[in-house]
Image 1 (cartoon, one colour):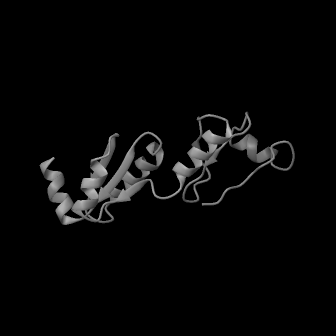
Image 2 (cartoon, one colour; image 1 turned 45 degrees about the vertical axis):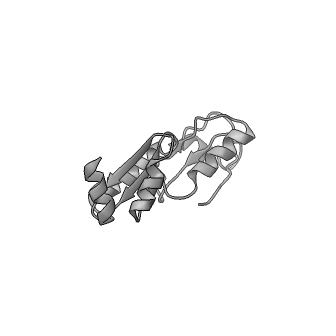
Length: 124
């Protein structure tokens, strides 16, 4: 992940206008080279809030569950978890990952293609 700073008063003014920057500090997350639809940051504007948010953005938005043990650990958390069960690299899995990217601040996401996990998912 790269972190960039733009000064909206000078050479970056056009970039800031294009992306609707009106307050400072403003954080926008651009994923996978998509420069047209950044994710907005609407959290606290203090150092602790900004750091917590940026840390939450590091790494994949959906954890791959490679075993039944991984599944059990993930679903035993005392928080809302969302698990997707897919054949590896399916279009549905790709759509699930995009949704996880958008909602990663609110929920914990995981996905699996492991046979034992898929069977367990049928039971729940």
